[in-house]
Length: 155
Ligand SMILES: CC(C)(COP(=O)(O)OP(=O)(O)OC[C@H]1O[C@@H](n2cnc3c(N)ncnc32)[C@H](O)[C@@H]1OP(=O)(O)O)[C@@H](O)C(=O)NCCC(=O)NCCS
Image (cartoon, rainbow, N blue to C red; front, side, top):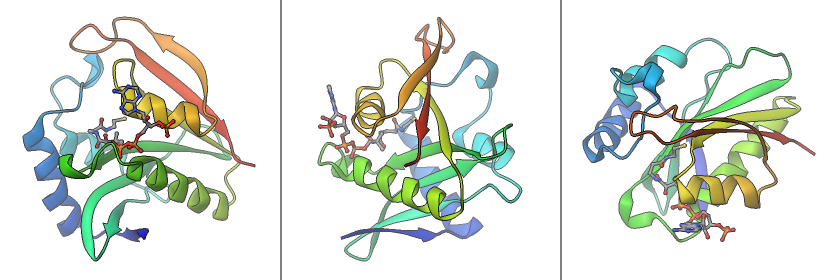
């Protein structure tokens, strides 16, 4: 069974280092010079920063974070990651679902998130969980890909 557990700063550093090494995140042109660790540390602060490690069979297989959002009632789903060998088995979708339940339990009404358009698994998860595309920023990523923004209404 998959669970989310609050993560300490030490632990998040360890798993961010693994993600960093994989160089899999296609950064936006605005944060081209920032590492994923820099991004999490920069946006991840204040009361709406909720970083979790994702646990499967007592092992941390990934992380998922929330970032603050400019509008009240909306929480931003920030960086998420699972170890390579655990991908494509539905665990990412399960982890986002647990995150949605958590956001709902805090009283949030909507979730904002964004990703790059060629990220098939992220876009697949968002679409299958009822996220609606609200904006597309063309040529916004360092490799020329677009940024897709989504909103999910929590029901
Ligand atoms: C993004 C990530 C967390 C998703 O986790 P995952 O366990 O691989 O995703 P899932 O197995 O739950 O699959 C998600 C959905 O994408 C779909 N999908 C996956 N690969 C696909 C492909 N190549 N083409 C079309 N759809 C695809 C799946 O079918 C599934 O949709 P469904 O539930 O409707 O069938 C994980 O892949 C990851 O860590 N990637 C690297 C880092 C990253 O990209 N982070 C996100 C940045 S926003």
